[in-house]
Image (cartoon, rainbow, N blue to C red; front, side, top):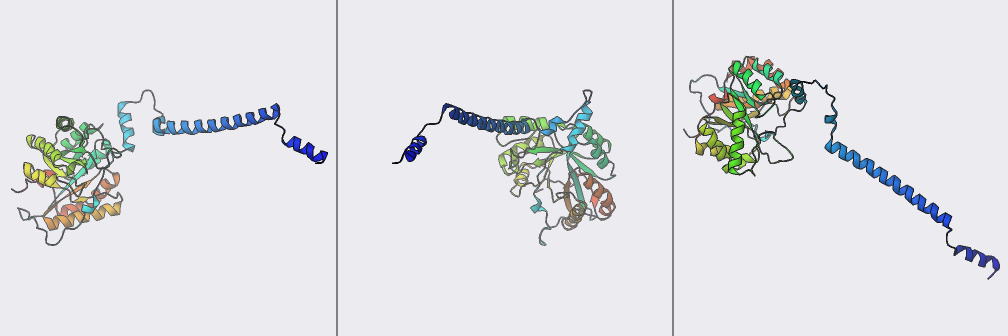
Length: 326
């Protein structure tokens, strides 16, 4: 082996110097620090978004009134679920109800989810039409809206929050009745809900695609409604609803929704649904439509009321419900 090759081999086997090792250590520390910093930034962003969302950053004046705070809730109306498959023209052989007086067919229009926007409630109350108000329990403006409706001699219902099949991802809000509640807790919560809104004549369900399929829970609800002489309208948020047989068994006045007016809240769609409601009433003798306190729904109803009044009797919901089998 030559001297040159031996010297090269010796250098190749030589260990790194202390200075070189320190450089490597410092580089690793720098990379670790950068990685840790990035991790902390990402983690902080996730924590901040989850536990302190942007909605909490809304600036408010120290002297902001309770009324102003309530108005802020208008931008987040309550969530509602629908079952649009039920909206269809019934088969031609369906038994037709005939109006006892032989006059025009009857339509009841129920507007759900009142309780958060007092201005739109006032607009609906001034339509000069028989609109039934369904008000959510414990809603910030619920009692005031009930007073407005009462002053116009409009019928008032409790829009009762019931557990949907998507719970808890979808939450019906304050006063919800859950399948997991014991009978005592269930009845106690129902009683509080009923007492939270004055002047109610009946009840319809807010959501409830889970509870309305459980007969024992519907028996509990209907037993209390029967004692209070209240009727029930099934919003039909589930095709598997057991409200009708439960109402028949307990003999409480009952009705069910035929058409959702504003599942798609655009003017043309609402006009189409109103026409469907009119056709159903002419075929069945009566029909129930349910809408929501959207500005578009109000404007279309205002536009279509002359046509509606010319073709049907617009009545309170209590005028259409009946004890099944009698």
